[in-house]
Image (cartoon, rainbow, N blue to C red; front, side):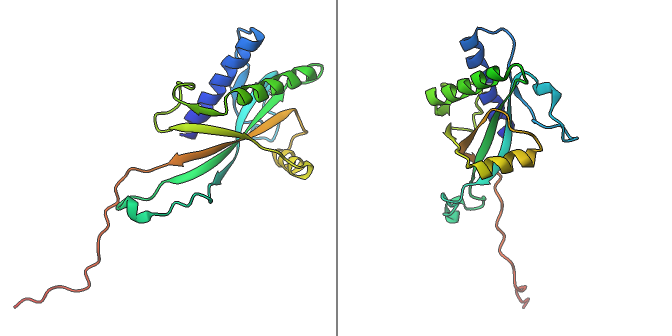
Length: 183
């Protein structure tokens, strides 16, 4: 489900930017920012890279009421942290700023997505809500250090409450403590 959600958002953002800048080629790519060797992914040169930064289980909405889901596990709710990184190396630094501005405009214009404004959205997802993430300088330093990269213009959004359910019915079997006696 995560791959469908992020692909849908990347596609919608790509269309938005292409329309705003009157471009023909795709400029948004859903990809890792770093390759397996720890180097900057060459596929994201002069692109806006979208990638999953973190997954967090939503603990405020507890997955209680287990009795309501007899024979099934209750749904789990997750928040996804998604980074939008503008990789336009010098002398195109101003393009990086332009693209990040377009990301901010895109999410300011639409903070809630559903199947009516995001047709590629999975039928398993009712709605998506995005919230900008404010990092302190220390947190920002940690994020970029963890990736092994130098800072580039970027924005992180928290995609709130993606719900996973497994509709597989699990049979509950009571244990038998003893055999009935035969008479």
